[in-house]
Image 1: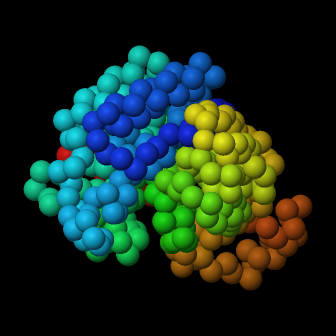
Image 2: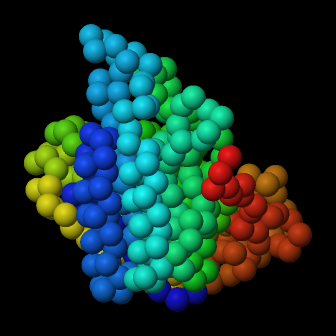
Length: 323
């Protein structure tokens, strides 16, 4: 597999879902897409709600005096549809994959999904990830929950999608590892001086699963989380500036660089795949490994054929565009 340059956007996002705000966000998204393409990126990740806004629970509440069921008629759906179409077309114009956060409405549902749209370099909407683990407020008053992961492939590398509070759910990242994902695209909207969600958890998941973790956040407050890309070998490939300005951050994912493939080269991911699939080595197999130059650390080539499913190219349900 060849190296892939990805981009992560920062400084995009709002909590106001009116038509004027959505048009401005669409303009910014497409402007940063062009910058990413000019910088040689194959893909760009945007924040949660980058296109539609990530509407504040009190702004959406049907009761002005308390948090209540959201009134989704306050979103300018017609303008959002136009901006999505323009963004999809723009991806084809600049030849760039884009993963863009947005609220997604389904006709037969009262509540929308909090989603990530997957747009291909040919200008087609090819997938959608719906947030599965919702915050208490989102669950009680705002969104419908998704029910499956989403994985797509670019030049042989597999990308998975996650949203915001799902950074607190290790099972999301464990599942993506088991599905053979190389990089998880994690998008959030956090505009306050809160705990640095992207910093601590992105690096932790990268270290424990052997995947790259790309994290997109607005980065609009001095102590807020910033966009970043964490490498499996305990390095930040890039981190944004927390000044609120629109930025495009670039990171090169090189699957042939041993330093960035610690999980593979030291055998952790293949070993976990074997254990999860019920494989237990015989004493002869262990002795053979202990006597090898690799000193007992299994790699993908050491896994006996037929003993366990290969670590990581499992099937995944893909999100249809309309459900």
